[in-house]
Image (cartoon, helix red, strand yellow):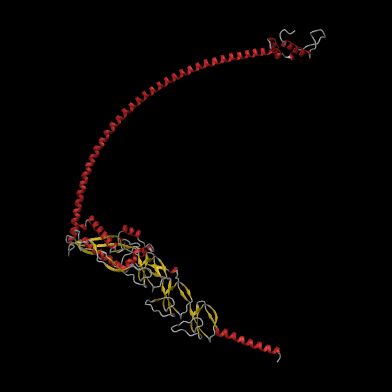
Length: 591
């Protein structure tokens, strides 16, 4: 066999082997995982698991902890076994479907109901890991049992052979509520003694018997935690923290709805503003009974409170209590009193006791008169506020809606009592009216007298005014004339002084002009004298003056020949003049 043929045979054999291997992988080893699936792998060979171990790690025999997401994978069916499972999806809810309803009947103190797709929390239970030796139901990481951490909304690839996921609703604290958290793990915080004010037989507050209650828990302790959850959505482990939704703000307890004015005041102080319009639409109440707005009516209506008055009559009162609680006080109320229904029952019991104890000090007519009724309501409210404040409850008002007074076993005396009191009030009012009428007549007579006195006083004032006006005008004219005379005198004096000044000025100016002329002439004379002295003689000065004033342009000389006066002296005239000057300047005695 030639070398080329041998190579071709070997290449063909290898191609067949590779093709067979590819076909084996594609048809027998290929595993396709869909977009919403996960793949669990079970190793048929490898290192044996430790005693008590149920989930294998890489290289160990058994169910592998690692899972595979969507995609294409190749596993040898001889060595591995595969199993597909769905991805774990924790829903985040659909806000467009969220609807919150407040119950119009039943207890309003509980949280409202919800409809729609709300968020979820995934509680994880580990099926593999070490055995938990603790006493709590929640285990730490790495142990078998319920894990402390939870899964928030999202999609997770989790091995169902290793973990079990339980979906539970998330904690929802609506507007107008707070979440009181109770920790179910940790050590107990201990107890403390407290005492609440009670009422004695006479209705007076007195210190109650101390009782032991559990303290509020701190972080890491078991019990009711001090901090509350504000409105919102919380992803908490229900096996670690239990949340009680507690309404805050003001509520009503009573058998009658209150007036529109009180309703408006309560609407201003209520914190339950959300869905107020929806509540008002749902609460179809008769017009004569008013409307509760966004405040709720408690399920168990307070029955009529009956007690004897001080004078032996039976008194029935109906009370509406407006009470509330602050968010910061909710944990203490839950810790000491309990759920909201127990709080309501506590308030009802306190109202009954206070109304009876305080009312037993009033006589029957006090409950019919308006002022006494107000005093009774004020005392009930103040006492109830003081007693409830120690229990972290706020009382806005205890409103007395209706009071009935009747003799025991009969209602006829009640009508007679009311009629007698009413007639007494009418008679008193009539006496007051007549008294006021008499007082009005006296005041009217005094008014008329005062009006006459006013008219007389007005005339007197008018006459005095005219007299004072005339006197003032005369005085003004006199003063004006005196001012005019003084003015004329001053003007004459000023004019005389001006004339004297002008005359003196003329004299000064005359003397000055004479002095100027005298000095001028003297200066001219002195000047001529100095010129004469400068020229040496008067003749010389005269010639100088003649020369200064001589104008040759006005003289014409005509030459008539030698030996005559009329000679051409166009040049000799100047020489002659100079000669004359020299002669005049020669000293005396010179020829």
